[in-house]
Length: 144
Image (tube, rainbow, N blue to C red; front, side, top):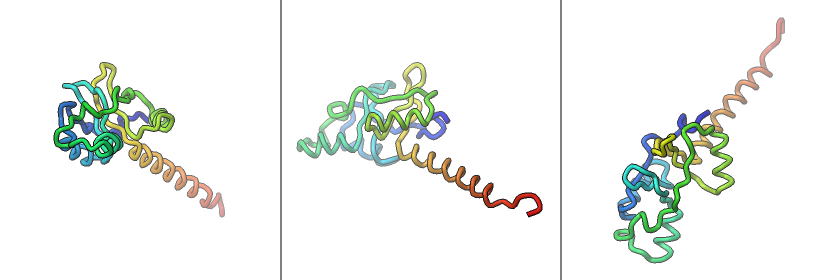
């Protein structure tokens, strides 16, 4: 299955000039962990709860004046709209990322993928498969 089937659309995003304080509502409104950081219409980074904790809280910066562009993780981790979910989840585990921007062939941000969405999708697939196998095994044969 392609990542766009389970992506958050429109993706949660803030501009890099935005303050951390102003970015927090966008982070918590969806999956609550991260947002795409934009420079105009291009994704240039990501801002996660981890960056806020490590770079704002830990260093005593003022979230009302510190800019997203100052603490974002850059460059942004992205995958293509054509990426399969299995490939995305392997990449996320290998790179210890919980979120990815999804971009088209021109690099335009089209969606947002959180690892929790991938898990929900995979659990639903496994549940359907288990139900199907259970029904097959418990079904009576001919004349039974």
